[in-house]
Length: 194
Image (cartoon, rainbow, N blue to C red; front, side, top):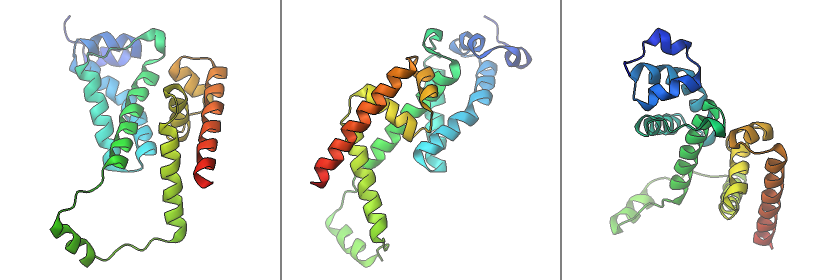
């Protein structure tokens, strides 16, 4: 397969670009990135809430797509929803890894930390952070199908119909999974307050 020219690649539909990307054609990949990079960055930024993390996330996601030979399956949805699901998974992984890391202290670090002025947090900020941690913990206890729809809705900002299209499931299934997941989260949080 000879390399596709940029002008030709720009005229191809997303699904027609994917075989070229699978062959690691740089022009096709450039067009693919131009089409989906902005939406990917917006999603990563909405989930992570910071520019550097979002940039790292989409870089990892697009490198993964390039290295994997773009294993896109058109029966599971559109190229855009497939791409955004890869970005979303990377962003959520980044959130989880950030939340799970506690700093390691040596005996010298205690003195350094005591000498450094502590940031003053209001009671509301502390309560808000504790609540967010409890909600994330409750989401992590859900079955994967329920946590996925909740994360897409609340971290990704997608509507239920968009989630149904992305996951290639009926809208009623998405609504049911979301309802069950939210009920479990409410129950988990209520137990924590008791």
